[in-house]
Image (tube, rainbow, N blue to C red; front, side, top):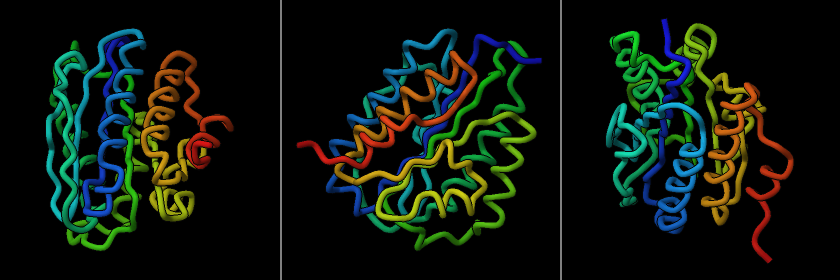
Length: 209
């Protein structure tokens, strides 16, 4: 049993050292992504997981209106697979223990990174793909992969993430990319179709004139 008026957003956010150059854009982008959700119907909760070579859950299942201001402090290397695997397992287990009245009928996982994995020790690509496939097929999750400085479609495809919800972006367009992701997720809630438009993809790669 689920409650149609409830949605849950999980954000897995890269805070490795290379993110320092887009720190303010990332902070503003996350705020923009969440602001878009305030326009969606129903009750929205949020989980934020950030990672370098360590994985940290900043908050879990927090009502959107109670989400604190986000400050990014870049450091370290990139344990991308560990972060995704941890988030999927942790949130899947947490949601499964919620009472029926609090169980979301829509769960969206948004992954943003600006580099390739170079520090994961607990999860490999095959295990992460298995977990993501299970979350998508069995639990109805929508998974977005936003990747800079890499072939996001190849990386996302390796992890079982559809191309429709994958975005390659220029690091200079981090805020625009997160804003576009927020718009797409809100639109998907309303239409049932989660897919980036050509305009959203263009905004993620085109530098401002």
